[in-house]
Length: 126
Image (cartoon, rainbow, N blue to C red; front, side, top):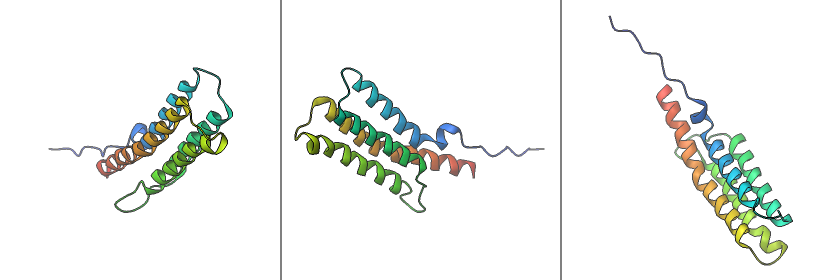
């Protein structure tokens, strides 16, 4: 007699994948800044990256086709702020500061991947 298989549950990695991707990018950004002294501008950029990770973790998924809108929105907004900080502070931007902006953009682009993994895991568990 066939037995029913238990429904799969979502793993922690799938459930928190958007935040885990964001935190991994923050760690890469912080490690990249260890090559020299962290300036006030670079520190503010790292703070913007950390704030976006906080937003990615705490903002809820939205209903509908683009569930990641709020999470991507906060990541994109703070990537723009991270890009603007060097120009507002000094009028120039250095190589390490450009790297932080690139990582902030990658974080905004990577957020939908994490959300998709979470939604796929929920769909399988349903």
